[in-house]
Length: 224
Image (cartoon, rainbow, N blue to C red; front, side, top):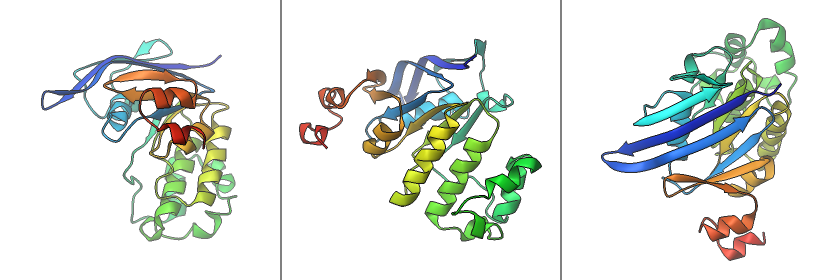
């Protein structure tokens, strides 16, 4: 049976200026929900509220019907990739993986062309794309029902982007995934459902034409 994550009735203001108004969002295991929106529209804010690390003026978060104020405190429920790097910089890659995964999964984690040669490297010595790849693969490998990915493709080479898309699609067989990215083409390519954060609310999107309608992309981009 699939698990269901819902966030409802979200209100969030900064300095008296409303950013999110009466948001409702739903994600089930098996979904890859692509969240689009212009810079400053509130995508990252919504993900942080959903994870529980940013307070909202009002919110209701339910996972399988259970109301959770801070989902990050619940075991095996939700993991989150923020825009900023979060791994301990002074540890070797192998040690970090051992901290996050059960011992029996570590060997298979490193059956990977990107990471195999980096096991003994300090996290601080990784290139930006390597760091992002490690973070994403770790979070997708953790035993959680849902994963939030805030700009997972940012600073990553085109080749690695395709590898990451494959990891996301594979993980979605057992997880629900919500992701954002400034390059809408990557989001449209990997997700099976889409929404647009627009004017403080959420618009459900079924095709590129609706992105033109709401002024997110131009008519010329529609044909790309």
